[in-house]
Image (tube, rainbow, N blue to C red; front, side, top):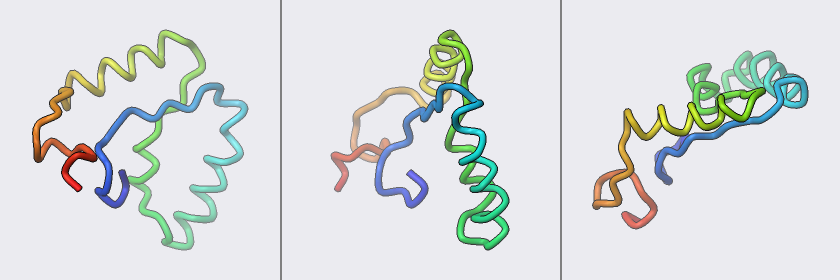
Length: 78
């Protein structure tokens, strides 16, 4: 998704305590080294409750839709 080679889909990391170390490392190491842009971290959402996952998925598709037409950012464009 970061490079635009696949369509945008919601990425939910479940359980912040589990993923916190990785996200800290991404911010403190990768962003600091300028190997990723801080905005890249916006591609993921950390959720602790099942309803947060459901809400994130619905919010994603409310904004972006679920169109499969050419040009809609799906793998069929390749």
